[in-house]
Image (cartoon, rainbow, N blue to C red; front, side, top):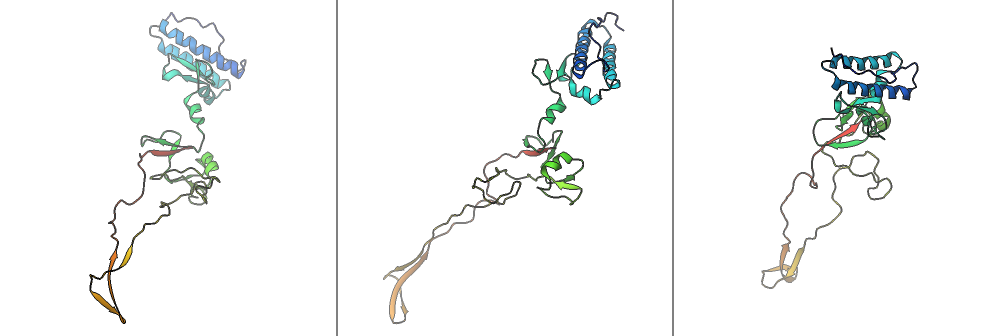
Length: 246
């Protein structure tokens, strides 16, 4: 065990005497002391880790939950040699932790991802029926807009597999009659194609007697085209994975 660990001269974090802000500052300063002590040690890494665990345990025993500690402190890049004080990131040594960053993304937002791996905190937009209880926050936002599931315990996610997204008209008048979240099939804009049926007088062709008159004519129909194309009308595109934050 190392014998040359420098002494800590700051305030030891103490729930009974510290305000929440003082406690956060004291834990932060104590972690900095531990970081400074590491280079002065030989084989005392375990001792430093134990000191830091003691501080966290004291916080829990003093009334601060582990969630509070996790929410207020984060190791920089997972490195125990450096630490960020988790705050509002207004100073160079402050940052939000991963959970806070994830919570900053609003529930119900849909994002497109470049891989098939679904990130933490997201669900694939595949129309699945999911629990109204387990995903209560998302259910409070979507309700049964995309399907009522089993009608009592589940609700459906939007199904964006193979679909394009169109901006909600919301009274503009470009895409009338649409409800938010409604599905729309493919459609061609109204148009026409002109073809010609011809009845032409022609003395060079044989004569046909109609009643008491002899009429020379030829009858022609403009040529058509063969079928071309595929099973749908689509623009150029790239397939990505749509996921929703819950």
